[in-house]
Structure formats: C-alpha cells, structure tokens
Image 1: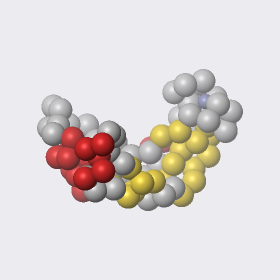
Image 2 (image 1 turned 90 degrees about the horizontal axis):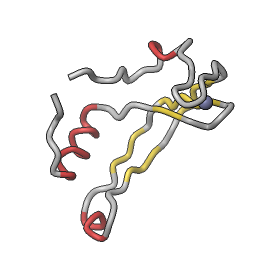
Image 3 (image 1 turned 135 degrees about the vertical axis):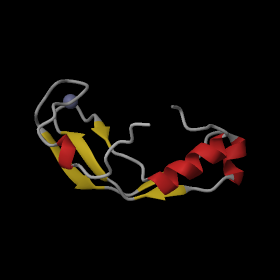
Amino acid sequence: MNYISHSLEGWSGVSCNTCGSDNQASFNGEVAIHFPGLEGLDKPIVWVFPQILVCVKCGASQFAIPIDELSVLRSQSGLSEVA
Ligand SMILES: [Zn+2]
C-alpha cells in the first residue's frame, strides 16, 4: 500500500493536478467528514485537521487523512484496504 505522506513536504514544487499551475499554497484545515445517506446519521462524524494544499488558480485542493481516521472511514463504509 502506498500511503500519501501526511505532511506537505513532498508536495512542495508539485504542479496542480487539475490545471497544472504552480501557484499552490498550504493552509491548516479542519474537516468534518460525514457518511452519506440516512444510514450516515447513525455513523460517527470523522474529524481531521490536515494541512490542505490549495491551488489558488482553480481551487483544486488535496489533503491526506491520517491512518486512524482512515481506518474509521474504511470500517464504517464496509470497505477493506485495497492492495
Ligand atoms: Zn489548479
């Protein structure tokens, strides 16, 4: 399994995957992840506080979910880790 780095160190100097711009900046994020549908109301809200890399040209953004929170998303979705 190739996990995404949870810091943005490896992402500096990388062009935007969507528009190719080099104009990206990192911000401190606070994200509440909700499970979809009515059944999602019975599942936990997963909070993550990632660094978010934002393309200031087109708005495309990316961040990595820490492994513990990723495990919750996986198990509550009934999904297993993909090799
Ligand atoms: Zn972009």
